[in-house]
Each structure stands twice: as C-alpha cells, then as structure tokens.
Length: 124
Image (cartoon, rainbow, N blue to C red):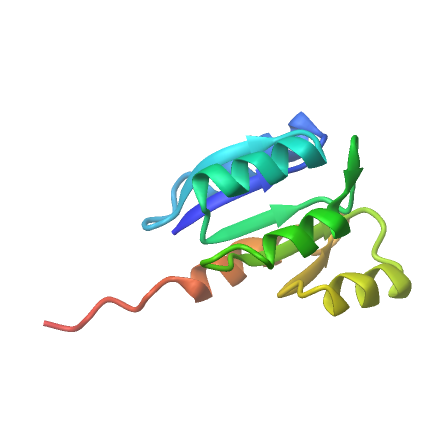
C-alpha cells in the first residue's frame, strides 16, 4: 500500500514514517509540507492512502481532500489534525474523508487503520 504524508511539521512526518517503517506491505512514497506540494505529489504518485493535516501552508487540508477525491483511482484519506473541532470533522467528512483523527490522542489509530486496509494473505 502506497502512502502519501502531507503535514507542515517535519516532526509529525518523521513520527508517522517511523511508525509505518516496520509494517509489511506499507510504503511511504511521498511527503509534502504544504497543500500545493500535496496536490502535486498525489497527482504524480497516485497513492492508495493520503494522510493529510488540516492546516497547512498554501492551502487547507480540507481543500486538498476535495481534490484528492476527484483522482482516479481515489485514495483513502486520513485527516490527522490538532484541530479536531466538530465543525472541522463535519467539513472533512462531507468532503469525503475516510477517517478523522486528533493528533494529540489518536495518532496510533492511523497505524491500526492502515493495517486494517492491508489485504489478508491467502492461507496455504
């Protein structure tokens, strides 16, 4: 599964990469630090999953989300934010977010969700 991470914090990107590094079947194919770079990388790399911050330089993660949901194939989108207010959750879910997590206490849920998306190996 190919993952794109878009967050303006290098620390957050590094933490996600560290959490995902040992997971078999998951590859981080790109990192973006702003909304424009996120859009460009998504169009170029066609990830299976995009992990987006809500607030980024040069645009909103919610706007990037809307654009990603127009791609074919459409990636799953996980919103990961420090601003988990109900109005932000609603806006993102209305625009097609598959998941919406709070960075302060739901960071580990990203790993659980991604592991749940991996295909189950066939038994021999």
